[in-house]
Amino acid sequence: MRRYGWVLVGLATALLGCDGELPEPPQVSDDPAPAGPGFWDPVPECSSTTAPEMIHDDYWRGQFERVNREVAQAEDCQLVFFGDSITKGWTLLAAHGKEVWDERFAKYHPINMGNSGDITPVMLYRITHGNLDFPEGEAPRVAVLLCGTNNYVVKQSDGGKVQWELGMDTPPDEVAQGVRAIAQEFRRRLPDTHVILLGILPVKNAEKWAKCRETNHILTDYNYPPDEVTFLDLEEHFMNADGTLKAGLFTDGTHLTADGYAVMADALLPVIEKNLAQP
Image 1: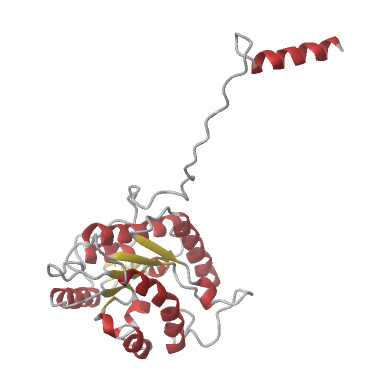
Image 2: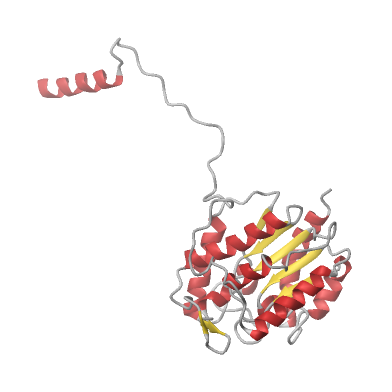
């Protein structure tokens, strides 16, 4: 019993100060803990965040210049959509989303900034070389960004002459950093534009979707300034509970049908209208 008595004395001594008084309890802040890494934290350099010195691919270059022309001529443009072929398919390519676009968004004089097959490093080039150079007073109120899926697919361009350190082995954190870098650049160059950042949409390929989904989880954890960025993960809108794609929303397991674009529009419109209504 004596041994245990000394232990209790030791514990009491540790709890009491040298003057025999209990120490002050630690102070607990009333401020909530941050949700995760800050949106404006520095973006590390990697293959997904480093823009090339030039776009050599003729197709990508042509689409980059198309967007530059539309931006330079923008009048009363309140809304832009920036991304890859899924974005472009709203009104171009097969244009499966055009009817929905005209019905839901045309009144906002939107610009389609989609570029088929695009990857985050090339997207960073585009937005730092003219794609966001709107005339004074003509910057959009809202930008919808959908980026990152092609980082897991595209490993070369310009007929194979340009090689990219991307593909299925690309770490999801690097892709997420590339997406965040694009969103940062939008906010930096267009400070009056609210960014709606979309998670990568589901795809049929299970290996790729696992990577994309992990990317989305990383994107979800960023601490976004609510007056600057809204993050939306639309997975539940496009997938069944058993992990299969919802029937009728995809043409090929990646790209959307007209119904798929309608589903995306339904999810986007309340957020778009809310931010357009802000003074």
